[in-house]
Image (cartoon, rainbow, N blue to C red; front, side, top):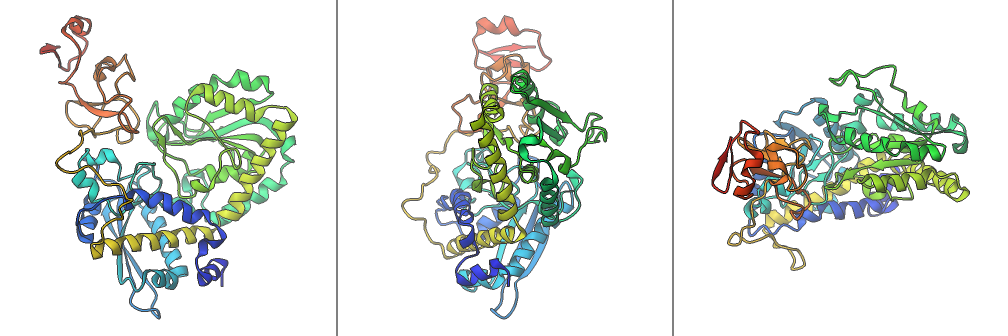
Length: 492
């Protein structure tokens, strides 16, 4: 009997890791706050099955769990709703789910009270499916998100719940093909062979694909440009900034002369973590080295959190970098200072991050998280099936009669780039007022929702609605083949 089974027998596998239940509370809060106004479970399931982003249908797997009796194990089956960009992603995620159900099936059923069948969805894109921007401000749609979709990461305003992604089975993109638990032990053993932390190379090191997702000017490229401005300040602390992209040939092809193994990374005194399009699964590998990790997990619009992120504490397990260059410079200078107190703090952070991954991210913990998530999901599904109403403390969505302004927020669906985008459709661009005053497609900073629009202020904006005065028309005449209409005048 594993420790996880033992703790489930005593009550819950999360008894050894209380952060799991706290994370589940946080991630399920958005779905559980939806006031469904009588919508049934079947209608909610149908909505989740059909949910798309404009004309893009994200990779999605429909999973059915069936339970007949305490003597019979759960049966788990999967059906492809939308084809993924890589076939191994849903396959690996389903493998993890099946393993958790196999280990904790009787306990899950006992807590749910003979649930029968349970339907859920695994979403295999690297950003959430159920964001406010995908509802277009419609209360009717958001009411149908009373159940979450399980995604690889989730933002604070998403109804998705993060689940362990495919890399917990095999992280092929990183060059590692062994299972996570094997890689965890191997990297930790390699780190132990390196010199003590204070004797490691005084460098802040990062290797990876600068153009994550294949998009020029993406979050990593912008982050690296900002960080290079901090290099002289780091040099004053005796720390080299060693940041190199391994995909200099483009198209995702790595330059072997620039790649280094994860074990070699452990020879650096400081490690840098940069998110990809939304997140990067490499954080836990870096933490294993025992060197303090400076992590840029998000930007001004927020962070897309993995399932274990709530267990990590800034300043204890890692150092969280703010999105602005001044804040990054201050955090890095504080981390890399050679003052005795700063060196002791950096060593403690590296050791704590390593210990957390070694002890807190084993396969047993992965399975426990899935088990607790399934229990919470099953209870929510049962309440919808019974037609229960939410408690008074739960917030309600706007009523149909007072439907909010429809803002189609577009930052992630448009790959974090302003301008024309397939998500927004014909004669529209993804813009934020005041963001870029040099781009004609966004009316030179005049189009967009502005900084006051919720947490993702980039909105799909029509070329034909440009709120500027006639007196400015001459300034922009002849700039673009697209037609802009301002104050009744058409600019060509």
